[in-house]
Image 1 (cartoon, one colour):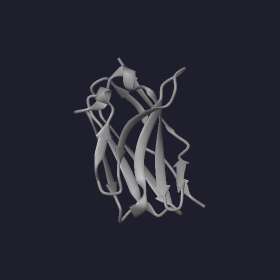
Image 2 (cartoon, rainbow, N blue to C red):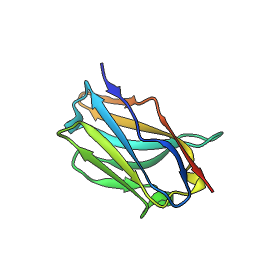
Image 3 (cartoon, rainbow, N blue to C red):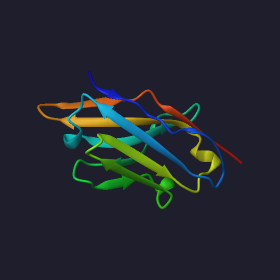
Image 4 (cartoon, rainbow, N blue to C red):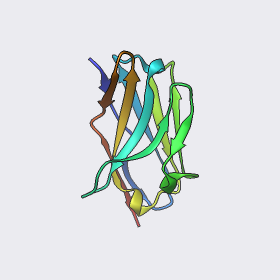
Amino acid sequence: QVQLVESGGGLVQAGGSLRLSCPTSGLLFSLADMGWYRQPPGTQRELVASITRGGITNYADSVKGRFTISRDNAKNTVYLQMNSLKPEDTAVYYCNAEVTIVRKTQYWGQGTQVTVSS
């Protein structure tokens, strides 16, 4: 059974930092492309950052220069370092894993709330 468990969310003032972690289990982590998504209240889920199994990263324009995604294959964990947080970063943040062997399969965590106060 594949599990992704996000942690590290919380309440922070604007300009502050948080680091999200997503340890995984039951997953061929080294073969997975990993991503962080977020869903602000009343809106659709959107991609924040992704990192391929080869380490290539991609960021939404709104977080470039402020957020950094990284992975530790030895720990089967993906991270999201968030600096210079803004109130508009407030959302539930979800960890995503995508594995393509015979077919593409996606897995999601339960989400962690990030709230940035002004």
